[in-house]
Image (cartoon, rainbow, N blue to C red; front, side, top):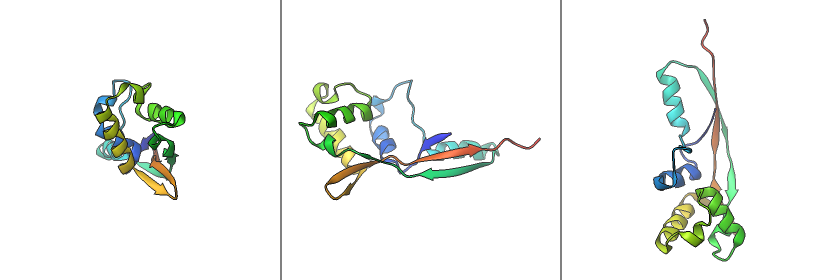
Length: 122
């Protein structure tokens, strides 16, 4: 199973805006999954995978590419055209706080874990 790490910027962004989630998409963290497995005595191994998404263009209000990246991250078509100025500002502030700067680029952390559960011995 793959899950987002607790420190993952994508998960923090989505948890900050629960109204963006619906019944089709519920993000859980590795901690939730491991608590479930531990509670049932199921053995597992965990493999951490660092990942970064370049979101620099999202901070350029005139960038068409940045708008498409925002749409994909938020699962909202034409977010810039349809969201209020206040909501856009809140999203951009949250996105900045969930990201890391490297030179002139901004990267959203997207770390994930692969958790391999073991079948109990019979």
